[in-house]
Amino acid sequence: MLKKSQMLKSTSCANSVAGLGKEEALLSVALSPLGGTTMGASLDVSGLPRLARPLRVLLVEDDASIREGLNKLVNTLGHRAHITQNVREALDLAVSENEAFDLLLSDISLPDGDGWELLRCLSEAGLRPWRAIAISGRCSMQDLARSREAGFDRHFCKPVEMAVLEAILREATEEAPH
Image (tube, rainbow, N blue to C red; front, top):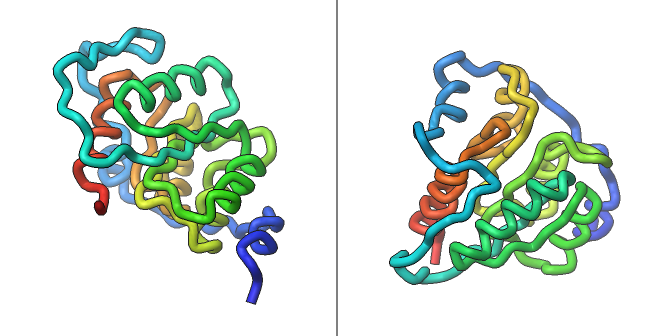
């Protein structure tokens, strides 16, 4: 039996693509409310209820400005962001933490691999986050199908409105096992 660190040294998690019906795939991206704020906007969180338990969020994004905006949102809402820029850093961090994160927020196109491979490797190592969300510029029907096949719960197309990201985090907080 391989140790988690040995398993994660391999980046050859196989891709397997399965088709989705058009309506099913579109539900994954149809949550953007009209008139929401954008990633760069400030977020007013005054009057928000305190969290029962902050989420441990593994944030994987190679674009510095998007990474900064996501980090700010996660922290503003009272969660703990663990930030990485690529697959290797994310896998190394997951192994060093030796505990699955509550939520994975991951870009799909990363410099050293992709978010699909990352989630498969985390799952194979027994470190799959409770919830996994893809946030990507890759938004074809095939990309949405690959995200679903890889195990992502949702796939949002960039740019994602701030209100959508806030809703994702609130929903994850309410539904997370305590």
